[in-house]
Length: 75
Image (cartoon, rainbow, N blue to C red):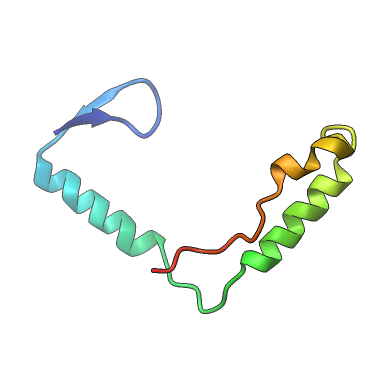
């Protein structure tokens, strides 16, 4: 398998099974299932930040940065 490295401007050459093992290890150790939906909390924080950023985002353009009715992936 030939692929780009995570960092830097280089390539990595390694056996396919080793690459697949690294992917599986990353998925198993770095993700977890949430028991509650935090979308509403995050959306409130984002909206408040946009509202407070008056020098960066004009009042007329705020709507461009707000996602209407966001929802998390189903499964």
